[in-house]
Length: 320
Picture 1 (cartoon, helix red, strand yellow):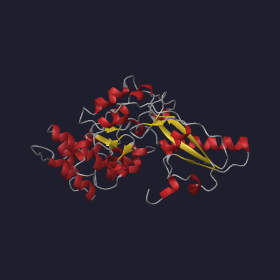
Picture 2 (cartoon, helix red, strand yellow):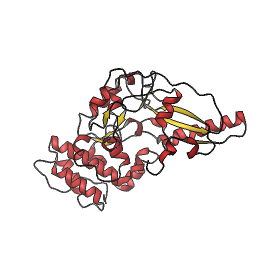
Picture 3 (cartoon, helix red, strand yellow):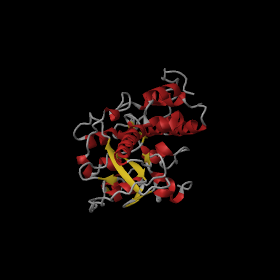
Picture 4 (cartoon, one colour):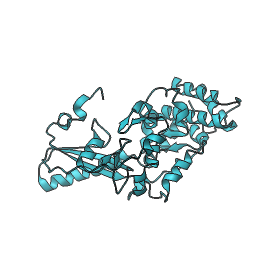
């Protein structure tokens, strides 16, 4: 934000000549999502040895899918109206996507700051086309959160500091994905077994009973992510991580942050119950080349009582 300043709020400064912004959304629930999916996903949080990856990240990288479709839409608009200047975005530039979507009528800003739609809840991606073509503006819709405070109450780190106010520095999605350094020590126990993102505020939102399953196979959960055990994922070498996350948004965080996140989750699991396999997996990375990984592994080992020391059970190759 410091780098781009008001370009976020002034589209014509980001893309000169912009006079209209077309906002779009795309549902992302995997096609195999069962009824009662919210309760099922909340149930994962009660199984500390299971790694939890946000639903949106279990399939193909949404940046690629939505950007490609928006580009096709821009091409079709240009074919219909003639010469056209446009540029597409999806979580890829200083764009106030949620605010643009709310002002365009795609939904309203929920108290968790996400966009909510009466027919689709909040489980969708947002994208935009900046156009140098003047289009009639669509009207915003009324908010329908009422007195509900479920999202504020459930947030594990209390990152939603008030209705419509989010402190990203406490948000698990930010900490496990965008944040590059050490995760604050006081927040690590609150992360639980979430290793990539956090869906809690969406899982308790009443409007998500209307969430729609994606029509695309792109967002189907890839094998090895949903229901995977922490110890197994922690054994991935960097080569395996890159191979298994090819085409996935997860790949963006890199192997180092992947290990950092899993180490925190393992530490949280060990605090609840001793587990030799998890401790052995941690010892495998105790001398990792990355100081960031070593720090989080050391913290995780401190959570185990009593401590256990032995050779690692990882057999997939060198972790460093």
